[in-house]
Image (cartoon, rainbow, N blue to C red; front, side):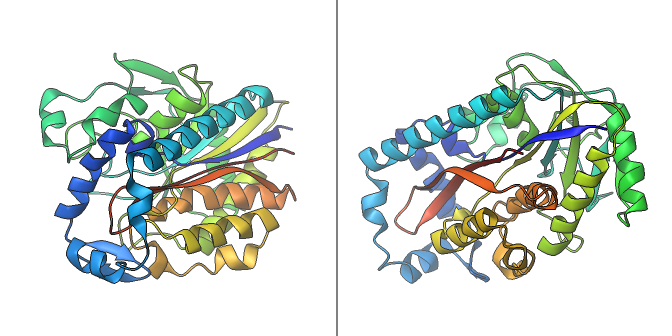
Length: 338
């Protein structure tokens, strides 16, 4: 039977691909945002800044501080890529999410397993670029190749996973071809593009994309459901005939838009300790921000590796602040090696 040789959890976000002096572009977008979620409550930017006025973020948003955070993130991405290369998997199961990139309101599945032959990725059109919020366009290099590119999938494993997950009580959606999203594109969602470009260093191996609805209520799966889903993914992968070496990769998180170090560090400590009770009890109110809810791409990896009794190794946690209100993106990078 197949062997799981690696689990990875890695953040993605524009600040990984913007130079530190460009982080202010994302802060401009924060100031325009009318809904910042923090610990279950929603704030506009002035209210958030007032609420966190005594938290001392000014020292975190100097250019030297931002440069130090950026440098740590680049080292951590390099370490993740090294761990991946050393494990040398034959196939990857990549767990990511969609942000109105391929799914529309016509259908947004809670869980979807892709079992087509390949997926595509390609640059945005000039019209798409012009419509992006500040700071997104310069970061596209981290998610999309310069030219239209085909990425190989592994339909046999995808089909096997669908059957196994169904037998395990998960009525997953299936896809053999990504739909065209609201902008008329079926390019790979950025959660997957990041893995191809930075983790796999533009040398993607055959893979199975798994999509979790982290963003759009009312059918967002809970933390516990994501954990159980991950355990079932692990069982499905390990029952796949043959001797393939398989990696399971979660892409996204941690706290987005409003950084909450206390929450992030608590989650990472629980994952390091194999504390399933803490992870499965995460309150949905803490995951109202879609970006923060990308933690649900990590939780299935945690579930799969906990099923195997493999501990998580944390490479780094870097809270990348960009405004006096504590907005930004907290980046984390971790792995599980059986």
